[in-house]
Length: 294
Image (cartoon, rainbow, N blue to C red; front, side, top):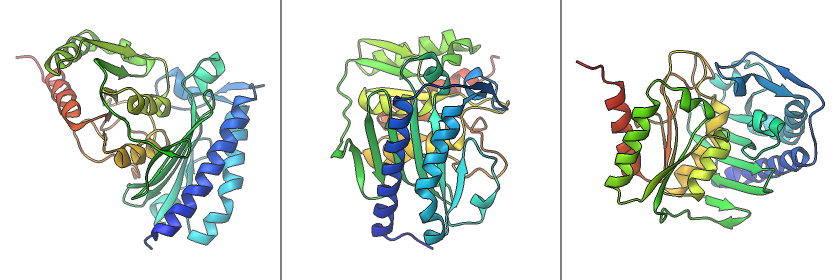
């Protein structure tokens, strides 16, 4: 089954309504329980609260009528992957509260993310709500990118190269060389400086890239489980495509957003960038850093 444009638009409207409802619920609520769960190697991936689960329930209730009507599967963070996403033409890919750690700590950097992804891993639509700012981002195949219901065309006219990253980046063995390489890239692009901000979570970081160009958000490949999950990148990948920006793995290939053997994205890394020139330079830097010394 291939979705008609009218179906994509109708499903996007449902996703937008669900993301906004969940985001506004999160904005007015504080967690009563904070627990740990199995996740990746970082603390951020191991924290869960009752608000994550209540937000998920709100979203699933809103999306429920679409499941039978369009024969859709569901993949959502706080529920075990049942594998049906591999057997349906499309599946909802949901992060009911991306950035639970900053949410618990009472700082910005968290969001609600809802995407519809085809079986081949292509994001068809995305809706993201930032509860702290009450800002809604939405995009759909051929529908363009919108912020707060208005068409949005991000620009890259800043004089600083802005890098958004997870807080774990500074612990990377190659961090000093990475910073030096980014400074060289900024100089090559005629920019004044590099500003690295390692505070937000994946969805929020991607949105900041679009709002702060020239900018990038990336995650290095790692052999250990982690590197974010499918639901961390599906909605924003659709937004970037509709904006004409870059959302690929670290090698420039399409994101593997329906990975068969795992929901983690550590195997190929993540690279979001405001333009291809910047993306190509960052890929070259990663290749140089990964090359063994002789």
